[in-house]
Image (cartoon, rainbow, N blue to C red; front, side, top):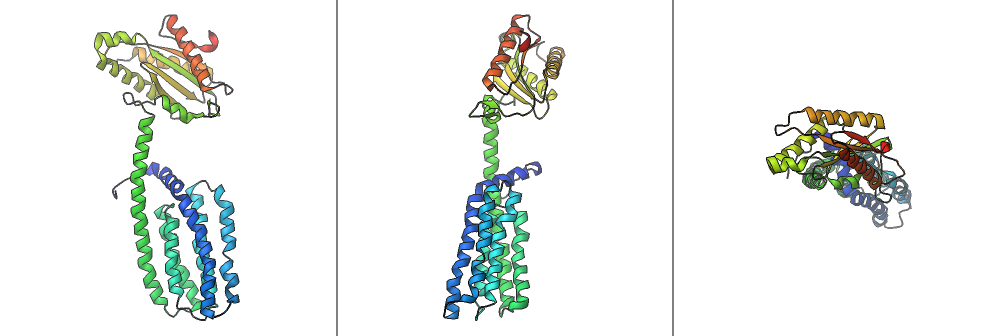
Length: 353
C-alpha cells in the first residue's frame, strides 16, 4: 500500500481525482466547522455565568466565511482552487476563537479548542495533496504563537507541545490515506484502460467512441476539423489460411505499429473488428488526411513485416458537426467498400464516389 507510486506526469490527474472523490466529505466538514464555531457561544456563556454578549460578534463572524464558501464551492473545479477555499474555514474558525478568547474571563480552555481544530484540518486534508496540507496545517502553530502576544496563554508552552505531535500525527494519517487512495486510483486507471483497449494490438476498441462523443447527440466533441478513416487489410483471410492465425496476429500488430508511428497524440486508432481499423484524425483537412492515408498505405505496402507482403484499402470521410458519429463512420465504410471494389490497395474519399 505505502509503496504505491504515481508517475510525475500523472500527479496532477491523481490529485484532481482525489479531490473529486473526497470533496463532498471535506466540503461538508468545512461548513460543519463554521457551525460548531458558533455553538461555542454556549460555552462562553457558561464561563461568564451569564449571556456572553462580548463574544457574540467574534463567534458569529464565522458566518461570513461560511457564506463565502457556500457561494464559491460550486464554482471550484480543480484541487488547486479548492486548497485556497477549503482551508479558509478552519483558519477563519481559529481566528474567530482567538478573537473570542480575548474576552473570556478564563482562558485555560483555549488549548482544548485548539486541539479540536486539528480534526478540522484532518477532514479538509482528505481531499487535498499532502504536500499542500502540511505547511497549511503547520500554520496552526503560528496562529497560536502570534495570538499569544496579546492573549498571553497561561499554558502556551503546553499548547505548542500538544499541537506538534498532533500536526505530525494528522499528517502521517493523511499520508497513509493518500497512499491508500493511490492504490485505488491505479487499479481504476488500469481497469479504465483495459475497458477501452484492444489487448492484441494495443489500440483502442469500440468502447473508446463513448468517451469522444456527446451521448445525448451522439456527435463527436471535437471543435477542430476532423476526418475519419476506415482501413482494411487486403486479403487478410488468405494470410490466416496460408500462414496461420499467429501470423495473422503478427500482421495486425505490425499494421497498428505502423499507424502509431505516423499519427499525432491528438488522434485515435480504434480496432473496429477483425482486420478493420478506424482512425480519427483531429485538426486535419481533407487534403491533409488524404496525404496521410496515402503515405500510410505506401509505407505498409513497402515495409518488411516478417510474414508476407500486404496492402491496405482506405476509405475517408470528413466529419460534419451536424451528423452523428454513426453517419461519418458509415460514409467512411462506404468509401472503403468502393476502394476494395475498385482494385484494393488505394485510398478513396467519400465525397468522390
